Image (cartoon, rainbow, N blue to C red; front, side, top):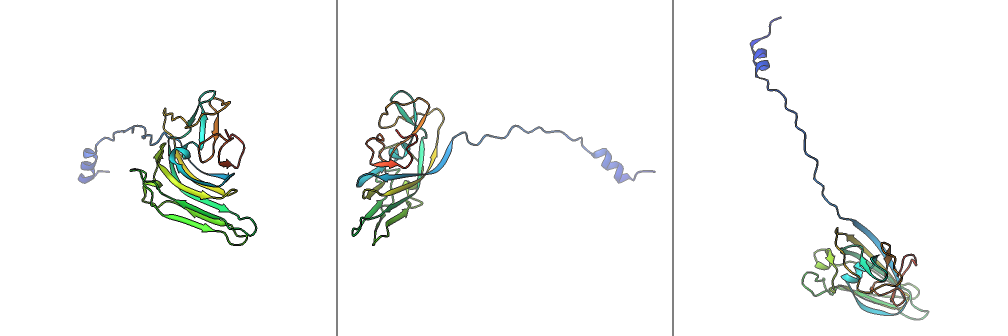
Length: 208
């Protein structure tokens, strides 16, 4: 059987196929990312600034007998929730303000407050405005993340996203006692040792 001229031309003009071995795909991210909710109970009335350093000092890793470093290098505040039940016949009032005023960490300056009624607790569940700098990832600093006012016995939840950076160690603002190097620990929202914190973590496991 004879081939047509067009078939012969196609056969003659066909180029050999070249095999291409692609290079390995890029590695997009070596950082450790962790999102969580942490819970605390106030053991005294509080009216205090909570800084981004405080937030990063919530989860620490031991680096010596008394030294601690932040497990993560950056933090983003997603939401704060507070519940406060009054004593019988009393009233509980809670307040949260995103009052950061430092360039790069400016809050939205909104004031959120609520008061109890009867046996119904005061309750807030708020977050900084999406486009405010208080809602962005921040490094450890004395810049204000939020200001919290709450009575004794208030339950405080913070929802956070953390990011780690390889080979970067940021020391905690306060030393520890009987620290095991390499172990990780929790602290209260004020960054001080568990014996003197105003914000007691709900789990006693790993607090320092």
